Length: 243
Ligand SMILES: Nc1ncnc2c1ncn2[C@@H]1O[C@H](COP(=O)(O)OP(=O)(O)O)[C@@H](O)[C@H]1O
Ligand SMILES: [Mg+2]
Image (cartoon, rainbow, N blue to C red; front, side):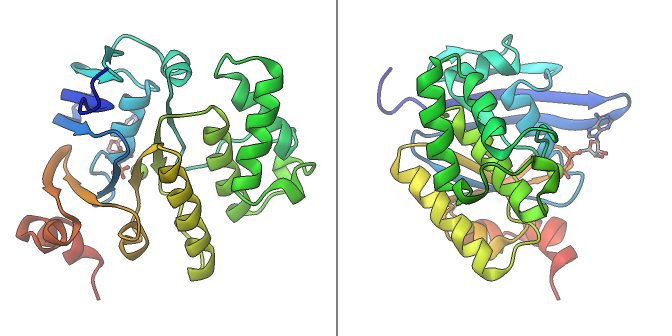
């Protein structure tokens, strides 16, 4: 595929739950190697957008192309095998399994050979600072480590585009700094990133482009500082969280 082709292109995504319109015509293109941040008030449809992009939920209308192919009809496991993976806002590890087993099972979803899955699981845990607790069962982990494991599990699948849903919430400044370093390493490895995050100053350490969603639509898209200064964004989002 040509180098300038977007790694992901979504066109006219619509999603409703009953009478509630949650995605109201979302179109966006993500460039290869891009670090895109997404902000917006609670209920804007951010998580649903990630679910629809990753294949966890089917859009009611619209199309999604990934790495040059139409993946609209593919379920999440098939998109994962192609390198399109998301994390969950509420971490969902296998509680009775160890940290290592969780990463290894996730790596297995890539469909790669067992030995390669082992190496990928170890690499993902090392990157997320979890090798030292690889033998603990997931249900003994605190929130920070559950979030780390959620990221490690997604990484272990070997993504080329990683969709992150609020993995920085509740972290101290030092912990957020470590997370930023992990994300920077992923970008150096040519993994494209979409990151939903409320902690804007952390997000801006890696995002080169920012989208703001409100009521199922993209209301601003561009250079982060310009988006944050946009009057619609201030009214819909920043007005509610400032001061
Ligand atoms: N499975 C679902 N069934 C019904 N309503 C849902 C479902 N998932 C999300 N919603 C609703 O859709 C809206 C958007 O939710 P969500 O995508 O989680 O927004 P955000 O991540 O921006 O906070 C909210 O009003 C939420 O309550
Ligand atoms: Mg959400």
